Length: 162
Image 1 (cartoon, rainbow, N blue to C red):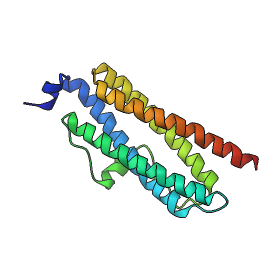
Image 2 (image 1 turned 90 degrees about the vertical axis):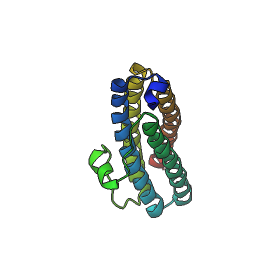
Image 3 (image 1 turned 60 degrees about the vertical axis):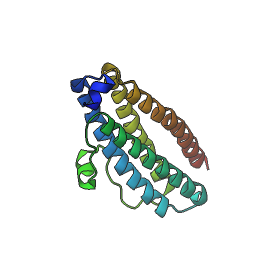
């Protein structure tokens, strides 16, 4: 028996959700890689704080990657695992070496804008498919990310005032 039959979900509607989850997975993988670079290369006055924050963010992102991939599996599909495919699918782009905290903050805020918009679209599609579990997962992501955006904006405002 197929998982979707047991879950009571319509395969056609769920496929739209899976397609968007697959793009989110690719974006999260690129974001994770960018965060590692920020963590390794950060310099300057806020080094200790930002070095620790980037590590916290990439660990959180690694968990989200796993949750998205597992949700794709639960919905009867197979998540992509090749980085080359992520780069072709993702809206987010790799960044080179970024050591300036203000530049990294700008990239982070733009990244969150992209992720939040994608997750809201997934919520719409998942709601239409009556896929409450994906709606809940995306809502949990949004709750954390909106708080992080608020904090990053506060850090950026402070660094600009100095």
